[in-house]
Length: 310
Ligand SMILES: NC(=O)c1ccc[n+]([C@@H]2O[C@H](COP(=O)([O-])OP(=O)(O)OC[C@H]3O[C@@H](n4cnc5c(N)ncnc54)[C@H](OP(=O)(O)O)[C@@H]3O)[C@@H](O)[C@H]2O)c1
Image (tube, rainbow, N blue to C red; front, top):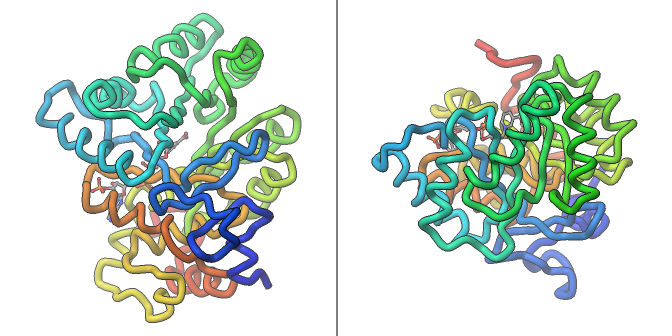
């Protein structure tokens, strides 16, 4: 069984306030950081997703609340933002926000290509930094393996040219897992992005261990199963034993489950609510559950198979 301290130490990848030697305490504004395996670059463990939440029109009344959420995210030590041209106007909505707030020096921008064919892929990739209001995309990913045989070679060329620092692939559906695993085994990816939660655990079987073996950083998407998990717990009180890993809310419960898997680098959560954001960030500021507690979390939630579960 893996002890809590082992999970925290996790071969130097997990660093937490006070739980480890001062020389290895690398929290930023109290938020744990983990290293990208290929380079050692540190990233805060909670990232900001933009699917649906940033999918808004150009009306300032819709955009301004996102400004508040993003600003708070950066103020609390967050640096990782994930978007995609596949999320409607989300990249442009982030760009609107980015032009109006102070961005962290170590901002880490991830986006994706979701296009068929070389020309369309290149034109989509070229448009992303302009839309997002940034000079560089740090991580470019093939979104849900769309035309990956064409797009992945472009990503490799562009990484070699210094246009992208990191490249990767994403998926959020089990139907893609077989191809996803094949690509992970063959290709020199820096990152993978995959769905994983206390209720969707299939990635534990092969994808997450393989990422560790291959030295790939892992972004987790859908940690709340796109919000579907919350209605299952609204009438339930948190169990007493949640205090053992400093868990104060269901949002933290779901995120701490994800973050306590040793393969995970960053959990991408999406929210349009400042209160939810601050709550979610706290999941990355304190203790994580050990293996025994993780099993209790799975049993308590009691959801297996694919959503929707009702
Ligand atoms: N194939 C892919 O590449 C792929 C697929 C899916 C997602 N992603 C990435 O992963 C990110 C996260 O996934 P996701 O957006 O699908 O879903 P998610 O983060 O699992 O869930 C988002 C939902 O949870 C709610 N929520 C967040 N914090 C909460 C809290 N503390 N209490 C109650 N409700 C809370 C949000 O509503 P409120 O606004 O009310 O807080 C929102 O409706 C995406 O934004 C995207 O960047 C990638």
